Image (tube, rainbow, N blue to C red; front, side, top):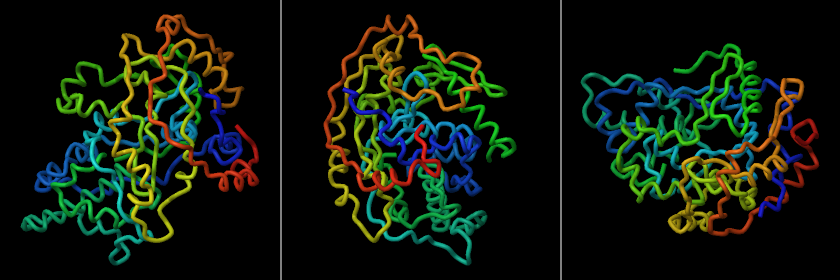
Length: 405
């Protein structure tokens, strides 16, 4: 197991390869909420669609820390579908979706047909600019139209953001046609001042994490890393009881495909077992789906449930992909895992001069006390490498630097 290199795409095109030349690179062009007011009359429609909780997050405290997101983007590795931290991996799971966004995680894949990337525009303005204020005397039909516009805004900015500025794709129209059916589908900003320096501080703070850290402090930046935040009693007291039933929670442990039209991602929870309360074993090789990452949906109309039939079938059989995780009192990486991780992983991204410590990799005693865990059985799928893309990019080098990281 873990026989292949963790960094298959080194020298191909990874953002971490350019940190030395662009140390303050920060994400800016991210989709944002478009200041559509959440009118009381559209709330019943949002409840019917199962999106009211998300709408409340959107209007009350859905904040985006772009430098922090940028620091984590540098650590995302498509080879393993996880973020690589100095002492182990982590990722966003279906458990996070259920608890934080209040969305169903068991349902049909979000897919269908895509044409070219047309958008509905009127008079040169995005469509939702016409829905900023709901008239006081609006009929129920008009309220329903505003509710659908609000939902399209939520889907295209909060759930499935991209870099297309303030436009929304027409692919969402079929999904808002029947609000009662939306439950079938599974799943104001901080100031811009000083973002570049915050990226550097966040990167350094992540580099300084150790296997024993649950919290750490960077210059002017305070973090708290909690690997099982949803086990706290105050969290369990406010979540919907249905989330905690085995019928729904078992999918948090499914190693399966996550589908969004032309985008296929791998729910690699067998590499982040401590997030679900277990002891992390040395994982098997990550699934190579580089060919899927090369797809963006352009190139004419396609019915994606047929074009990606294997992956849709895998999601359809998601219950067969649920792995067994033995919960323990002290979840975390095993000693064997840490020994392997310290030898194989690229742990640090900041320049060496930024550290005041020797970047020690001592395995803490509690890791030995956790013992080891067995690699869970999981469904096997063939790799889908994109050799042509890799070879072409290898000739070009990593971005414009030609260096590996």
